[in-house]
Length: 86
Image 1 (cartoon, rainbow, N blue to C red):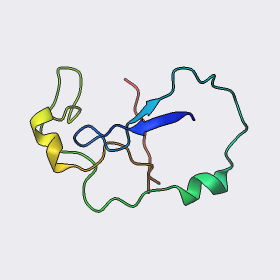
Image 2: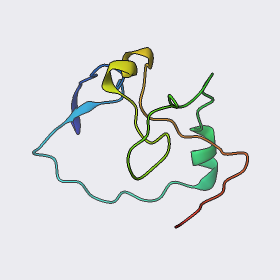
Image 3: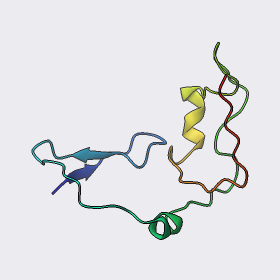
Image 4: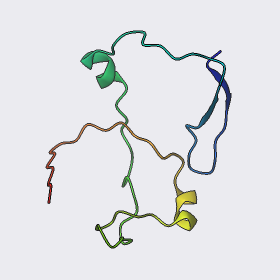
């Protein structure tokens, strides 16, 4: 078995313990339609604004604030995506 056990840690409910004896191999590709069925619909904001690093704006979340969240990963379908490289 590839996944030995679930290992949730606080808001990271998706954590699993991987079997170190298992050899990973490519089993194929996921189609666009499969990805669309896996999209999450989060109710509310994805992260907490107001905490920034020297290099970014709203790019940090204090660990003490993470207990308000029940997960750390979402697959989202953005309405409008803008990527800025500076």
